[in-house]
Image (cartoon, rainbow, N blue to C red; front, side, top):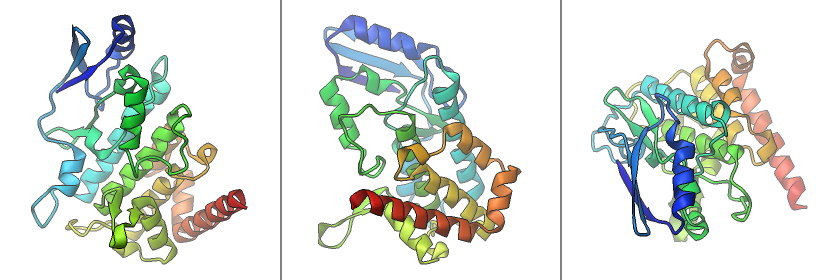
Length: 275
């Protein structure tokens, strides 16, 4: 995979490349090399030949998706493991800043590989702003584009990707009268109305159990918490994704109530901010 762009400062570009050169993890696309010619820059990444998650979720022409529920949950776990490496195991930490279903490549065994690592740090400030503006639906609507993008912003994007994987819907679409409908708000409304069956991607041949669906929905909802400080770390998410995690087992026994309480609390918190 080759990524090209324009950059003025050669030294800054090389420094940025060296910062991500040593990043190696089975769920991350490996950087193989780079090229400099005039003000043109080129990064060469490992080639993953099975497309990206966005294509398989939204561009599949078969009636039944090849992405079974188990495959989808393995993809979620693989993305989380890649983010753990970036957020907690790398020194210094790496914030992705552009986590979408299109940036998740899949190999022939459906293992996810996060791509475009460190790209945003190599772009010009104006290019970074344009890049973030194209992530509609993956970024908190209240995000201030003048503020630094940190790990908790990555967590929000990851929560949206989880919802995308569950529902098969895109993060933002235009509905009647040109109104924007955001996936996060759509999922929350379905949960509040207790219409969980409507949330699951209809192209799934086998639907998950009610307990499993509520468990992963609660994780996704926590990731997109409107209050950035309340979002879990990616390490917390890894623990919650483990099926034998004691805390999550306790929650999942009464997960419908847990989800509703969570939504009520976040609603009143956001209401208090607007007053």
